[in-house]
Image (cartoon, rainbow, N blue to C red; front, side, top):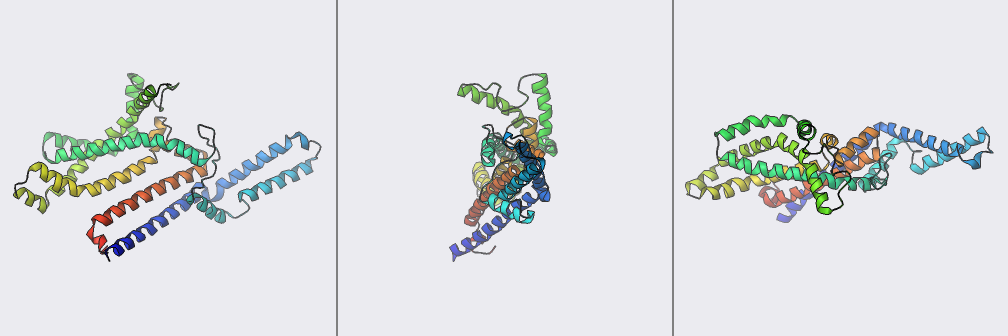
Length: 354
C-alpha cells in the first residue's frame, strides 16, 4: 500500500511534467516560427539559392528563359516537398514537435559551430560546457555564501553586520549584468587588470595550465558581477529562513534540554531547512545552464545565453527550439528527481494524502 501510494504520486507528477514539456516546446515552435513567417523566409532563400545555381550553371546556358524558369520551379517544388513545406504549417508544427521531443534537432539556418558544423546538437553541445563552467561556479559560490552567511547572521540578529547586510540586500534589484558594466569600466578600461571579455586570451595558450589560468582570469569579472548583485540578498533570505525555524517549538525544547548550541543549530535548524534550500538551489542551477543572455553577451562569453541571443537575432528557429528542448528536459528531470526525494521524505506523500 505504501509503495502503491508513492508510485501513483510519481506517475501523476511524471505525466504532468511530460505534458508541460510538450506544451512548452510546441508554443516555442509557434512563437519562434512566428506562425510560419520564418518558414516563408526560408522558402524565399531556397528559391533564390536554386535560381542562382540554375542560372549560373554552364550546362543550362542553351535553355531559353521559359525553360530555365520551369526548371527552377520544378527543383523548387521538389525541395519544398523534401522539406515538408508542401504541408500546412499546422501539420509541420507537429512534425517539428515530434522531431524536437526525440532530440532530432536538425540543422541550423544560419549559425555554425566552431568546427563549421550546422548540426543544432553539435552547436549546443559545443556551447553548453562553457555556460556550465561559468554559471555553475557562480551558483555554487552564491549557494554557500548564502547558506553560511545566513546561518552566521541568524545567530547575530540585530548586530551591526546583520543590519548592514539587510541594507545592502536591495542591491539585488539590479541584475548582475548592470554591475558587470561598471566592473568592466573599472578593472578592464581604467585599471587594465582584467580582460574586457571572452573566455580565453587570443591567441590561446598552448600549455594546459596556462590555458586554465587564462580561463579563470576571464571568469573573474562575470562571476564578480553576479556575486555583487545577489550575495547580500541570498544571505538575507537564508538568515530570515533560519530565524523562522529557530523560533519553532522543537528548537525551544532542544534548547531547554540543554543541548549544545552547535548541535541545536545543525540538527534542529539547518537540517529541516535543507530540503527547500536544496530545491531552490537545484532549480536555480538548472535555470542558469540556459545562460544569462545579457551577461554572456556583455562579456562575450561563448555560452548558451549568447547562442540564444544570436539565434533570436537571426531568427534561427531550429537553434531556438533546440535550446528550449534541452532546457525543458533538464528542468523536468530535475523536478522529477526532487519529487522522488520528497516522496521518500514526506510521509503525507507516502500515504497518498497529497
